Structures are given as structure tokens and as C-alpha cells.
Image (cartoon, rainbow, N blue to C red; front, side, top):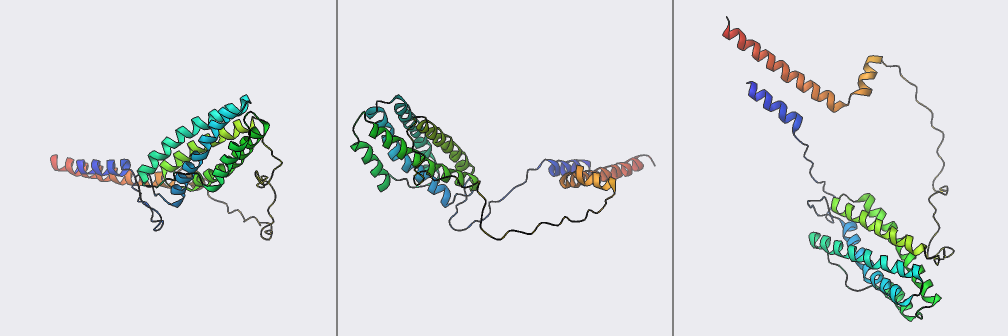
Length: 255
């Protein structure tokens, strides 16, 4: 009897909770890392797409620019996307995601601009810095959105690495001093801090009356979580049964 009680107590205290993956719809597939949905697949494809033009752009920065800061930015692009490409291919294989193999039309157009600009010219450096900085700003916002909402731990970790890489690239591109922040079409102004005009203003909230509580009860509610209280009750019940069974055993042994 005592062995049974001890086993029950160990199971109640030590057993980890099991959580089933919630069914989020037909677009989500359960995996060992959590549900894999459209945003995760889109992330892998977009990062692969970025590498298809930013890697070549980085190589042009090294070969065509005479500006040491542009060359440094080119090195960061090459190294950063070599690492991301490896991670992307690995995860795409894990989650069975098809990756693009060619830059899209816009990306190819930016590469064409860099190719057409004369080597060792201010024109090339300007096109290089501004096209890449604008593209990285768009990608960074997308990464933050996926990182915030994904339920897949592998995609979450991958998005974090991507954000760190993109932020590094933005930093070295801005360090060239060639990024035109007056071009608000390419780099939109940040609007988060401006007051929102959407929706009517809410009336002031009337505070609810405070109901006095017994101080002992309030201390118990504030200081002890519900789960711990429940565990204490279970432990007390088990201990009581144990003592009761032990007492009966003693009475049988010593009439």
C-alpha cells in the first residue's frame, strides 16, 4: 500500500505536462518543432531569394568599388548569405519546402543597374548602397513579423539568425555614408510613434471600487500560486492516507 502511495505522489509531482499541437487549419503541418505554416515556408523562400541577388551584389561591391566601406559591406553580404544559404537549404529539406533558383524581376533589375554602372565610380557605390539598404529594410520587417507569430521553434530560431544578419548588413551599408534617407519611397518614415487616428477615442475608465479582503486570505491569494496550492492538497491527502494505513498496520501488529 505504501509503495502504491509513493508511486502516486512521484507521478503527480514529477510528470511533465503533455501538450498536443493545436489544429490551426489545413495550411499547417505538425512537426517535431511545432506547427509549420505558410509564414514559415514563405520565410525560407524569401531568404533564399534574397541570397540569389545579394550574394552577387556583394561580389560586385568587392570587385567594382574603390571605396573601402563599400568593399567592407560587400564582404559582409557574401559571408552573411553564405551562412544563411546553408541554414536555409537545411531547413527546407527538413520541412520539404521548394526553394527558388533565380532572382525575381526586381532583384535582377537591381543587379543590372550595378552591372551597368561604371567600375570605381560614385554612381556604382550609390546604387549599391541604396538598393541594398532599401531591400534589407523590407526584409527586416518581414522577419520580425514571422519571428513574433510563429509556433515553430526551428523557424523561430532561424528567423532570429536572419534578423541578426540583416541588421548587420543594414549597419555596414549605412556606414558607407551613401544611403539616401530623404528617399522616403525607398525607405519609408517610421510611423509607429505617431498618434493613431483610427477609431473613436474611448471615455475615461472609471476605477472599480476596492473590496476589502481578509488580510490572511489576501496574503494566501497573492503569495501562493493555484498550482502549488493544489499540489499541497494532493500531498496532504497522500500523507494522510499513508499515516492512516500505517496506524492500522500498527494496531494489527500490537493488539
